[in-house]
Length: 241
Image (cartoon, rainbow, N blue to C red; front, top):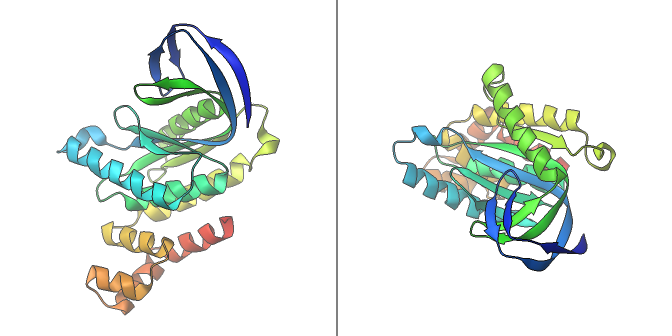
């Protein structure tokens, strides 16, 4: 992480996520390296109670923030979007998986993950103002995820991109997106209980604890976890860590 002293003059800054006004000021512009994440709440306009959906979304963001350390914790921004930033791809993948599982049915979300650098240039009414290649890559990635979902891969919710000229500095795009496609297929096929059980498993809860919470037998929990792909999710998460 490096810092540069820059003069910012009054006006507007757009970084693909925030648009804010600020006065003339002399500030330090901090450059970060890592994974920028943009989150989009899927189908939010179709929710019968949009206020309740937003509250559930914010609660899920907070739950993930308690589990996964972040350079910038998940936070709602404007409308149905949120953003976060992580030191590496492993943390970003963990956070995005947990968020999908934490959202109650029928809520779901879409992710764009961008690897590269970005700069903090100040703050606005909506939070930190940032710009840079990682955010551009994340925006391109979430657009690609939505396009692929519409065209062919109905279960796809995540896509990963690397900033131009930085391909050798981060995990490869092809292998990462192959993992995301398979992971999204598993999660998209889960019902509400299966997601809760998978989330509990990833949080380290025992099958007995999960059974008591659901009011079912430990055997039923075990069968569900094996049938719905949760054990594969747990295994992949352990390998990534």
